[in-house]
Amino acid sequence: MENIPGYSLPEAVPVYDSARRRFTALEEFRELINYRHLLYQMVRRDILTRYKRSVLGVAWTMLNPLGTTIVLSIVFSQVFGAQQGYSAYVLSGLMPWTFFSQTTNACMVGLIWGGSLLKRIYLPRTVFAVSAIGTGIVNLLLSLVPLLFVMFTVGVYPKLPALFLPIGILFLSMFSLGFGLLLSTIAIQFADVTEMYQIVLTAWMYLSPVIYTEDKLPPQYIWIVHLNPMYYLINYFRAFIFDGRIPSMTETFIAGGVSAATLLVGWLVFSRKADEFAYRV
Image 1 (cartoon, rainbow, N blue to C red):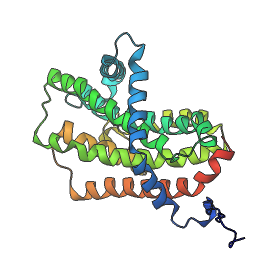
Image 2: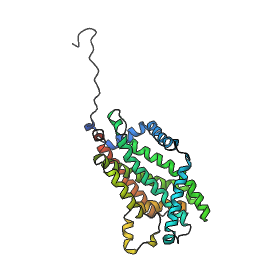
Image 3: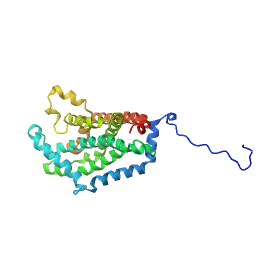
Image 4: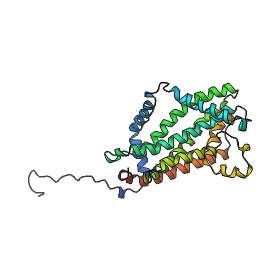
């Protein structure tokens, strides 16, 4: 048929075969970069949707942590209130914890509720988790306003090391993204994980230095707190803005190492299982 005048062989039809991919984690990262405009739109949508029907609007992001800080300060000030500027201490720990809890929850919920799109169009699976982190960063930056207000009110003033706070935000974002990807991978398999995680978060918060300092803990329980990765990340975040100091190399190595390792493991596990998600959501 090749010799028939006017006849040409049809062009080869490209076939997508996920089994032939070798470096799924790297390809997922490349695709995320290619879909960066979609990522921007998802973050923008989440922010606009959150405040569209709110009477207070963006101000709620500032008032919410402030109100929670007031409640925690009143309840626990008699027990842990020896810390100077206790309200600012609580808020400087509550901010990274709220960021972690909200973004990891959003990673799971975003993938589960947005999973129907995976059956219709192609998009990087990690876009749901990364957009949750992007939205969380915006909310975290807005929350700095009430933190500064509380700090000035109680007489704790930010110092020059506060300019390096983005390093603490970076480590916190890396850890939250990695952990959120791991949770999402499990939640796709077992739907009950989303509800159970709320209970875990409650216990996890009280094992983190949000409302207390380490010297308030019984010595026999300190080792349990030291096994908590959020212990190092909250203290690292707090060092810049509340303590007014540059964290030591040891603190940086631990916080950065935990964050990088969690992100690497979460990304590898998630990207390896990502091709199965369309069949499970």
